[in-house]
Image (cartoon, rainbow, N blue to C red; front, side, top):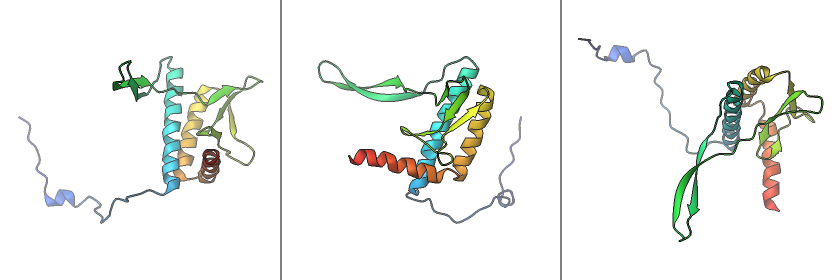
Length: 153
């Protein structure tokens, strides 16, 4: 018979307790950063599946109507496009996308060249860290502004 240790006040003393409130809204740049991190995670999973010769898919819900006009929700695979490609010289390249726009990592440069898929995987990890730290916030703002301008037309 296993014995369980009861939690006492002294066990809770090691916790770092603070007074805090959950923010109602996040700043827009944090929302955009999280959106990009989610897309980078998808690209990472897509790349891992390619390296392991498996498939990766994300399900989404879609509402469809039948011939009688009744609506129902079905589950379909989300369409995922890889952000990597081979250029004319056969070099493996990767570009970060925010919506339909490519993010400029440095002014005038938006594509990263790597030698193989294993290096691309480590590069993706570096990019995710940089995005989480806010290093690409200016590029995200610029791409977001360009996307908003397209909707204003």
